[in-house]
Amino acid sequence: MISHKFCEKIRKKDKISHIIVFGEEPIRAYDRVHLTSYFSDKPLDRLYLSEEQWYSENNIELHLDDPAKAIDRDNKSIISSKGLRLHYDFLVLATGSAAFVPPIPGVDKEGVFLYRTIQDLDHIKEYSARAKKGAVIGGGLLGLEAAKALVDLGIKESTVVEFAPRLMPRQIDDSASRTLQIKLDKLGLTCLLQKSTTQILGDGHITGLSFSDDTQIDVDILIISAGIKPRDELAVACGLATGPRGGIIIDETMRTSDPAILAIGECALSNGMIYGLVAPGYEMAEVAACTICCEEKLFNGFDMSTKLKLMGVDVASFGDPFIAEPHARTILLEDTNKGVYKRLNISTAGYSVASSWARPAATTCYCRRSTTTCLSPPTPKSFFSAKKPTANLPARAWNRSPIRH
Ligand SMILES: Cc1cc2nc3c(=O)[nH]c(=O)nc-3n(C[C@H](O)[C@H](O)[C@H](O)COP(=O)(O)OP(=O)(O)OC[C@H]3O[C@@H](n4cnc5c(N)ncnc54)[C@H](O)[C@@H]3O)c2cc1C
Image (cartoon, rainbow, N blue to C red; front, side, top):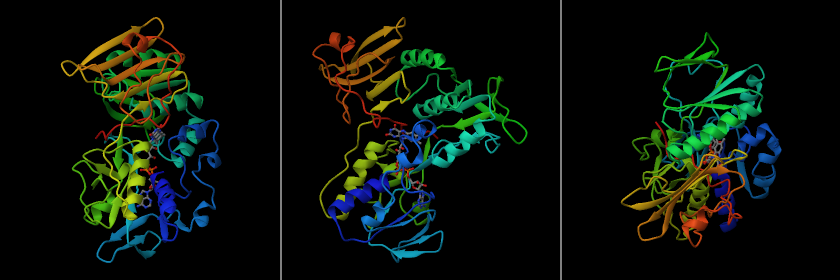
């Protein structure tokens, strides 16, 4: 996604340079953020980020199904898997990330899937036709989205298995998680918290999961959604600096430790942070285009607002949801009858600094796109009232948070 955005951005600034794109996947760039809608209302045609002819119209040479295999920094050239060797003046790495797969015995069994590409979804769809009981390892934003997708695919019994004591552990607190859990239960999703999977059971294909507390569940299909791992293998192989837990180290101009090579998107480690979000990636694409065109623009970090993409289950989190006394004061509203949980953390000086809530669809959303600022109503009282939404947090304000190893 970020490579495509970068191409758009640089073409606006520079009409003549020769741009070559190598893609590992056999299809052109598509909207990964809305991948799940591929199961329901969006055929692949509607997920593509541009028309097929867009690349040629913009004088961009596209090599699909031909991943870059090596970087020869001494000769400033890139070698593709199909054997092409091409010179570069600037090289931009936008290799994204892969799903992190925990080393659980049995992960290679038939019926165990990841949730990252169109190909993953094709495989899940095909396999789900013969499955009755599903599970997802990982109760974060993506895991919950995948679990709901299993239900929508007709798997009536689906379980979310989370290692932490609450769902969306990086975005919401225990009470919000409880509220969310009740809502998910109504959608047919069972949540098992504080569960450490020790084995994927089955002879050839998955039949169940066993846990460290000696319990087991029956499972026919499993999706692993336990975090992301930046795709930095090309960078490592050619000696670029990478972080101790992965990711290509970049400065605020998007340059790596080699000034002719830039990195953007989920493969890039900026100030110790991998952004598992599309919006910061788009900003990185803009900064990289500026850097190459000798314009001054720096990347100074980005907001990590989050929104769960489950119809009818509104969960949003922005700022620092866990900030507490003495650094902030907390105002809470919890209505277990209506299934509403709202929490507003305000600074001791009176500014809104963070908030998190889980609430039903009809109540108010006060957050603003791409900023840690809450659109604060005049008083905390009105913040907690269920008036007409001031603004909706866009779907892109979503976060799978930094890597979980
Ligand atoms: C199901 C799902 C839902 C999501 N929802 C949201 C959301 O609501 N909001 C949000 O902000 N973010 C969301 N995300 C995250 C968002 O999709 C990513 O942040 C974004 O795709 C990152 O873009 P990227 O270009 O860095 O990586 P990618 O989109 O993964 O693109 C990287 C591409 O590089 C290719 N590649 C890797 N190595 C090579 C190589 N050596 N040579 C050539 N090509 C290579 C990969 O095959 C891939 O096609 C979601 C992700 C998923 C999977």
